[in-house]
Image 1 (cartoon, rainbow, N blue to C red):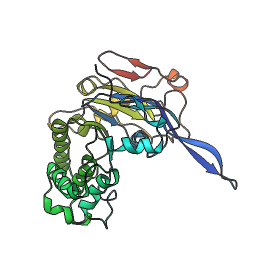
Image 2 (cartoon, rainbow, N blue to C red):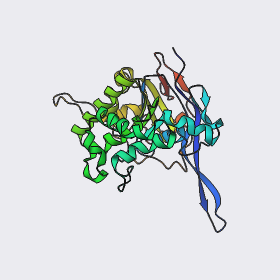
Image 3 (cartoon, helix red, strand yellow):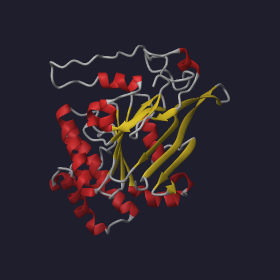
Image 4 (cartoon, rainbow, N blue to C red):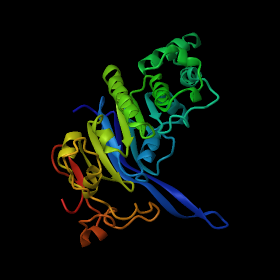
Length: 321
């Protein structure tokens, strides 16, 4: 196996809780609590879990939109957190982030062509006279026309705006794209178009994706490996087919049981989780999932489960396995 394009080792991100007249730190929100992943070149790694599980914080920590608390992030053999601001600026074009909200991530007063092309100018990647041509080229690869270049974001549909977001990331020729819930705000039919676009761009440009989503049915169609997060912790990772065929963690089984089945006659036993996801400011002891797990035993309440190798790149953190 080749060297990973991206390695995330024991990543932690805690946000301080301030209170009192002196604004002292009285606690921490453990948004990400010891996450490790490795992504090979040309691979699509899916990161799934409920809202509040810390998926987006992982993505933002990788590109240093938010600074880590602990851990290492290695990209192309370099630890990103050892780089100076100037060195990080040089490497940023290779790491791009696509945001969840295709409208909120675009300046409504800036024309689409300028929004896409400004990074090319800012990083000095192409001469000013060639920017428009480059923008038109990347728009075409994302399914938009050259005349769209002079329009404003409000003149586009949600699906078209997400294509613009993809084009803005793609124009810098990145090696890794972190897609943070890129289709969750779109209609189902448009979701399929965007997923097909992601797949086509990967095949033609050799892209590597970290695809963040709460929807396993979306991840199934795009990802080669999947990691399941809960309350800032990785519960299970496995190749896509292995995870869907043989899920081991009760949380993974519960998520899979909620995936719609296209054939009405087939039935799947639904696992309904009781209660809400606990606060990351005060996570449960032991296994973080034990407060909602229908199979929890006494050991789960006090002992943190080891992340164990189950064969075939399948890892799980559960006392019951």
